[in-house]
Image (cartoon, rainbow, N blue to C red):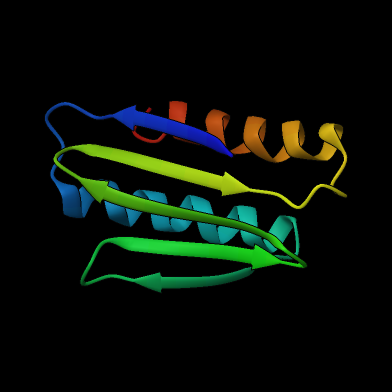
Length: 93
């Protein structure tokens, strides 16, 4: 399992969730993943063929957890993780 965490000082959870939701929706679209969101809980999830990811926004921080089946190549895992990390690094930039 991969865990990606970013903290955004001075931003409200609603601001962070709004931006993260946009990023995750785009990632899901680019990688043909199913995307579900829960705006009230400030969470979301993506999945496809055994691969899944969840995110939650709390206390000025977003945490993304990714799980892959054994058959997913390492190169694909790194590509998805790098894409998410790049987007989160410039979330408010």
